[in-house]
Every structure is written in C-alpha cells, then in structure tokens.
Image (tube, rainbow over all chains, first blue to last red; front, side, top):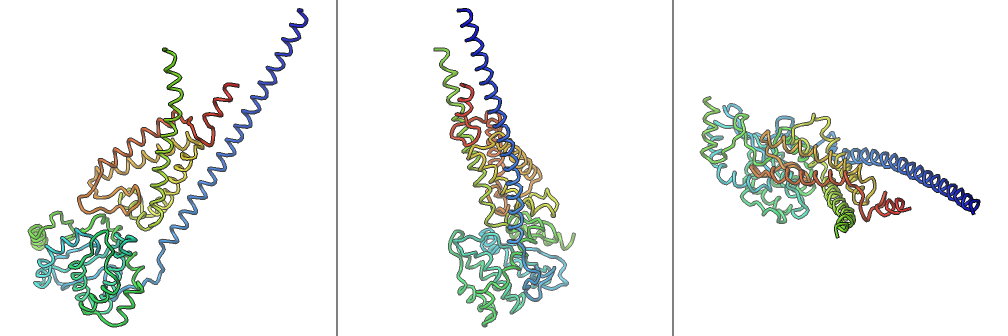
Length: 253
Length: 167
C-alpha cells in the first residue's frame, strides 16, 4: 500500500509538472502571438497614416498654373471695388450660400455702396466656399467660380453687381442651390454675357482658384462668415450704426 | 445571499466593457471617416485652432482621421483593447486641450470633431457641449483601460481568459 501511494504521488507530481510546463509553453506562445500581433498592427497603423497623408495631400494639391481672374490683387485672391485713394479699407469674407452674409448684405450693402461712391471706403472682397453639399451640387464653389468668371470678363464693378444679385436671390440653405443656367443668366444681367463666361461657369474654370482663396481665408484666420474688417480691425457689430461708427473712427482715428 | 452579488458584478462588468468598446469605437470610426471626404476642410479645421505651425497643419489634418479610425476599429473588434483605450484617452485629452484653449482664447470656431472646416456662423460656437462630450468619453476610455476584458471581443477575449484560469 505505501508503495502504491508513493507511486501515485510520484505520478501526480509528474503530471502536475507536465501540466505546468504545458501552461508555461502556452503562455509563451500567447505572449509571442501578442508581440507579433502588436508589431504587425503598429506597422499597419504607420502605413495607413502615411498612405492617408499622401492620398489627401494629392487630393488637395492644386496645379501650379491656377486660372486667376484678371485685375485681382493680393496674389490674385482679392477683388477690389472703389478708389485706391479711399482712406478706409473694408475687407469682406463671405460665402454665397451663407445666410448671415445675406442678412449682412441686406442691411449694410447700401451704406457700403454710398461710402464707396463718396470715396471713403475701398471694398476688398474675399470669397470663401465652404458650404458645398451634395444637395446644393457644390453651390458655394459654383457661385464663387461664376463670380470669378464675371470679374474676369467684365471687371470688379460687374463682379459687385453679380455678387449683389446672388445675395438677393440666395437659395435656401439645405436646398438645391441655383443652377448653372441661372448663374449664367445673372452674369449676363450683371454685364458679363457671351459664350466665354457661360463656358467658364459651366466648366468650373476657376474651381482651383476657389479652393485657393478659401484656403487663404483660413490662413487669414477667418473661421466665421461674414467676417468684416474695417481698417484691418474685426467688426463685431454688423449693424449699419456699428459699421458707420467703425468706418468713421478708422477714417479719423 | 451575500456571495451572489460579486458573481452578478463579475458577469456584468465584461458586458459594460463591451458597451464601452462599441460606444468609443463607433464614435472614433465615425469621427475619423467624416473627416476624409473633404481634406481641404480638414486642413482648415486644424488651422482654425491656431495652435500648430503651418507645416504641421496638413499632416495632422490628414493623419489624425486615420489614427482615429484605427483606434476605433481596434475597439470595435476587441483587439489590443487596453492599448486602444489608452490611445483614445490620449487623443481625447489632446482634443480637450485644443477645444479648451480655443474657448479660452475666445476663438469662434467649430471643433471640427466630426468633419467640417472649423467654420461656424458668427457667435454660433458650442464649446460647453464639445468639452462635456469629450470629458464623458475620456471617463469611459479610462474605465475601459482599467478593465479591458469584455464579451464579444476577438483578441484576448474574456472567455479564453476565464477558461485558461479554470484549467
């Protein structure tokens, strides 16, 4: 009996030892799998990030020979209306689809126009196109491209008339936007007609330019529209009274 | 009856971890994916924070969504859960610092968290909501990093661990 017990005990010890070894091997295998998996995952992650950066960089790169509308300033990004001798510069950053811009134009455009004709103010129009949706068929981009085509064909004053027409007929946000045909019609109404203008509108000739000026506005630190700068200072109060006060202080201060 | 509670807790914690994984992972995948269709807007959104030099803006705008998607997929699948939870916690801290500093500096921006170009209609910011959301997700991420074992996970699954311990 004691012999049997001893033998059984020995057998049990051996089995326990074997089980412990097997468990240790399993743990080692598992650890190895985890390490290998971790390395593979890290490599995949790095590759995915690098590919992502490369693809998106190529998607945002505009060609070096961007079509720029004629008689624009500041590297071809800005349309200027008014005399160069005007003492006060007013910068407008607007998107044609932005409802707050339409509200600003509705209340302040007449005041600005009279300041321009009085020779007090020179307007600098900075376009932005960030309200493109699939529903409006990229209306922000199409509208600004059309404005560039009008400017290129008929100059800054026609640009301003077209700009005012588009705000007066701004399509509802979330709606389908104006069609290219409507844009061509408003362009003609603003004084830019003919095949070349219609072609530039429908073929998005200034599409890269639109992308460039939108990026430039972001580089200028503009994150909300409308952004109005009077003498380089951001105008907080967009009412007629606020605008008039700011222009007066910029003129005399 | 006293000893029944721990058993109940032990069953429910892994399911809570699963819920945390799906929530965090889902939000990260969606947030990352929404930043991909319009890369120019992503660049503007990052630039709008005015925290990074121009040379770093585009790489961050393009790389970050990939990172978010990777972390999100790991959480959804249940692989490298602790690492992914810690990574998402780090990302959320970065987001909180960015949004908090934009708020403190009085910038008028949209966080760009789910795509978009960081542009808002003037005075239309939503900083309190953005901070609360990120903070709540940070709590979930840290809890998950502390107890990463969960049900319905591909890697290092709860089941496997339990079985090997039972053996």
